[in-house]
Amino acid sequence: MKITLSVIKADVGSIAGHVTVHEKQLELAREILSREKERGLLIDFYVTHCGDDIELIMTHDKGVSNPEIHELAWNTFKEITEKVSKKYKLYAAGQDLLAESFSGNIRGMGPGVAEMEVEERESEPVAIFMADKTEPGAWNYILYKIFADPFNTAGLVIDPKMHQGFVFKVMDVIEHKTVDLRCPEEAYDLLALIGTPSRYVIHSVYRKDGLLASVASTSRLSLIAGRYVGKDDPVLIVRAQHGLPAMGEILEAFTFPHIVAGWMRGSHHGPLMPVPLRHAHPTRFDGPPRVIGLGFNLANGELVGPVDLFDDPSFDKTRELANDIAEIMRRHGPFMPGRLGPDEMEYTTLPSVLEKLKDRFEKVED
Image (cartoon, rainbow, N blue to C red; front, side, top):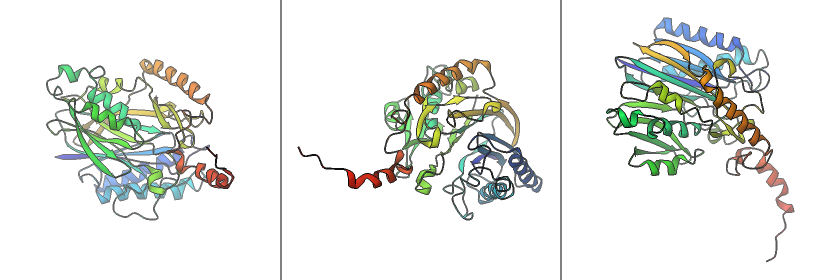
């Protein structure tokens, strides 16, 4: 039996600015999904949040991009917006809902989506990562470390099922094209692309025999809306063990808080800080960017768990380093590299500033 794991997220309103969601939003989401589980549309579900984003984790047998599942997520976010976010005047109510009505597939409508359809193995551990105040390209470094770096993942060297490497499907989010790159033989080509995370984003990773190992959300809200409407706050699914990276190898990739785009107004660089659920409410300069991780086992579609993967003192040094990096980046104020480059600022107020000043620029004679 094939099981589909769908992770769909959206920011539909939050308390005290972009800090955290309201418990009544989560309660309503659980009520709606519980009804659909009883009706048989879902096998199981789990509702959580990272910062101001609500995350719907759902299992079913409908396959990826299923209209019923996507419409359920859309209607859930709409109902939360109308019944809770607007009622309590939460900030940015319905922010990620960029369309007036559902049109068959939630992709391209604002919410982020990561889905995979799998035949459950004898044991099926999965990790689901959810970030706030950053963009899909934030996963590039992480996925490279997990699936291509033997200094991070010992199994690439000593596990016969992993020794041949993995295939990375990379998406050009500007041109809407994908390319498959095989590692280790095309590792340098892969790095040449994914080192530009604002444009080239890892969509999914496969073992050389075709086994799907990981899927990430790739939507860019600013490219959909044509203006800044909030950062994308991506989600990521990674399968673990049995010829795939061990859970400890997956988590090892998060021990370096690499610098990502996002943070305040989606216009700054900051460290990606792995935190337990209880710390998933970024406040300093609306950040720094956060990531939470939940570990489950799939059992005929049932979500067994979760384990709060970053609720571990072994990540304290990582968080300390993230705070040190955050301090350095904040001292730059409005200067690059604290602030994003001009290509990423085109969806902010910068174009209007340039428009206002354009007639005051004077040509310099050589």
